[in-house]
Structures are given as C-alpha cells and as structure tokens.
Image (tube, rainbow over all chains, first blue to last red; front, side):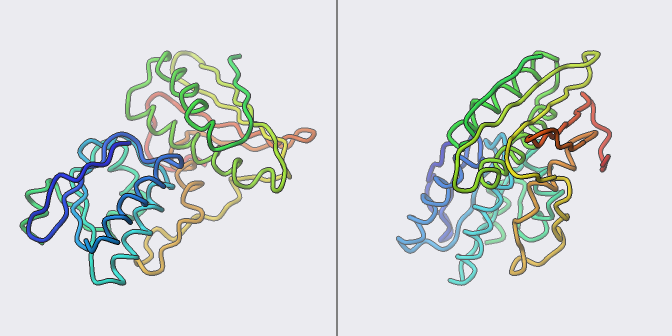
Length: 111
Length: 142
C-alpha cells in the first residue's frame, strides 16, 4: 500500500491510496491519516483510483478515521472506487454512510 | 493436492494469500474473481489468527484444488477450539454511521463471495471448505 499526500485544495487534503488495504497494511493508513489529523487537517478527499483490494480490516480503518473526524467536525470523502473495492463498499452498505464521488474533481465541487 | 502450512500469525497473511491467488490465477480466474477469493480467504485467516489459539500458538493449513478448470476449492484447517465461522450472524449493513460495528462483516464477505461453504469438525481440527466458481452467480449461496 502506498499513501501519498498530493496537496491541498479548498481546505481539503488530497490523498491517494494505491495497492491493498488489508489486515497487514491498514494500520499504516490509520497512522498516516492520524498524523495528518494531529497536524490539524480535518477535511480529506481520499482517491481510491489506484486501490486494487480492500477487506473488512480496511473498512474498519476507514470507519475509525471517519468517526474520529466526525467528532471534530471534519470529514472524509472517497473517490474513484472500482472493481472489487467498489463491490465491497456496496455490499457492506458503506457506500451509503460515506460520501463517494466519481472523481476528485467531482468531490471538490461538493466540498 | 497443493497445500501450504504456516504458523497462524498475521505476518504470514501475504504468503498464504499469494498461495491461494496463485492457484486461482493458474486456473484462469479473472482479476475481480481472484480479488473476491483473496477477500474470503483473508477474512477466514484473520479470524483464525485472532481467535483460534488464545494464549498459545498453532498452525493453519490451506489445501487448494481446481475442479474442471472452473471451480477452486479451498480447505482451511486449524486446530483451535471448535468454531463454525458460518454461524456468525450477519451484521446490520443498513446501520447508520454512529451505530456501525465491523464485527461480523468479514464473515459476511466470506458468505457473499463463495458459491458454497461447509464446516466440519474432524478430530481436533476445524475444517472450512470454500467453493468458488470461476463465474459467480451473484447472490448468497449459503
């Protein structure tokens, strides 16, 4: 898994996550995002265009971060889910509790 | 039958998943179906890593075979306390964000991804058999 901070727009931190979010790699996602939250970031656009795979451990990591940010008045939105990642969000119902957009551009228009 | 044995520890997850994915790939399964198989396998394995051997160490074994070039069959063995993962109740996938619990979601994914799942207890072993057709007809089969 590779997490990259690709800059800031409209007061949102733009992040890309590539590769796999599984039981081994997800703690790194939580720690990295947690670090940015500790630095004061509370609005995130997380681009999953390069994410190939996610398991329940990955969803747990996202939910933990979403709940933490919600309590701080912040938010996370996701973009460009595809393949099995999209399927996992749909069958788990996560696509109804976390805002998902087709692209980073579409997400930015709503932020 | 190709088989892999490993200590039931999270650091071996990648190796075990690679074994399963490698066989699915050799059998000609598509990328999305392989991801679904990896998902089911990860959820079962992580459950074993976390719960099968409380306070002690143990192994996990995966047998993998292909039938008729269209069906992948995994048998996942552990020697923990008797436990049928298929008995875990489904989570509420319609719950609001504040009420969302992750418990049970992994097992839910297993049930969603397989075409057939069976549990049996033989001697000291829990044996979970998961059957994946190359083209899954979407919808619950078990």
